[in-house]
Image (cartoon, rainbow, N blue to C red; front, side):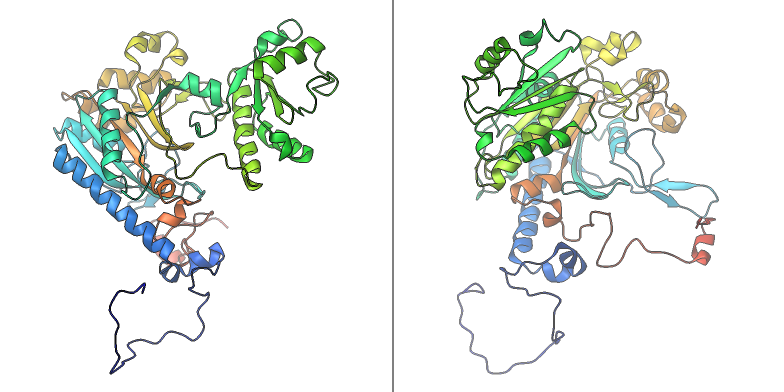
Length: 494
């Protein structure tokens, strides 16, 4: 029996607490429940074996991580504050009002500054199962409050961090799940963007993007980048209408042009981009991309990495469509870990305004070979930033930090054009004999969702938020009276 091996003979029975006659949904495993109901009556849905197994597995993995870090590597677990001050750059932060007029706390996006300050304070190996907050709507792999395994070390290199994390995951991985090999493969940011069109590639798919500019060098000289992507046998499963929809979706947000065609007959030159290609192009594309009948060919041309990024979206959309129709392309049980390194230190501002912003965060140290570029061509500098990708999702990111107050102040004031006075506490600490240091944070919710083979992190969190960042069970966030707002000197516009 599922409840145990002991047969119970009942002699007396007491009803401790009756339930209402009609529950909002059946508690049987095969009964499908709308997500809104699962969220509203979360305490009932937690009784399902799926949630029971996921939360217990999460608990076991976290316990093994703690044992690995504290018992084997002498880390100190430190709790850092959740009421802090506003920090420049990065994601939007939640404001917390105070009774002091016009003054606010913020909830930290991460313990980044605190863990660097702990390095100054000689806590040379720190970790924390940290709660973090971002004022963003929830997505399948993100919500406004989340948990990360936060780690920082003094006198460490990228190699030291990478080795530690590979050991941490190996030691905490559930025995019943498929194992993986260490060390994990590595790839530069440039390689990932060139081959997959994303800095978090799903390497379970073997399809890669190829540079085909040389085929068109005579006819299309203005386009600096022309890329091609072959979807093997995609034409058998993806209709022409669906191909058109994929093109429209993948072009959103990019200025790159995107073309698509089904390969129906390799001997014909009239069907393969008939309006755009000559016979010589046709033959060269067939040879270079190893095209076969029933493949789908996508071409994209534009500037920098935009053609790659458009094809990167195509690649995943096509895989989704084919898997919807029964083709097995990505095995959820297999774990494809991948380290991405050599990121750019700065990127153009995402809002389109002039200037640069940090690719990771403003405390990331430049690559040792590129430090001089900070004062001449900062947009060309590489960083000591590294991400850990698992099955196409970023589950961890970290860097070696800037430990020089002078360099940190220069980056903030001269490159990012941020007000460094908001970080004076950190700059003063760096000037107090701060050791070189670096760290990483693993997204525990995303990691557990992949381990448990669920589509959403909400399936591995006991009380998650909805897509809109709401708690459907309690109704939070809620309105409060003006009398309560008056305590904090706040008036709400209507």
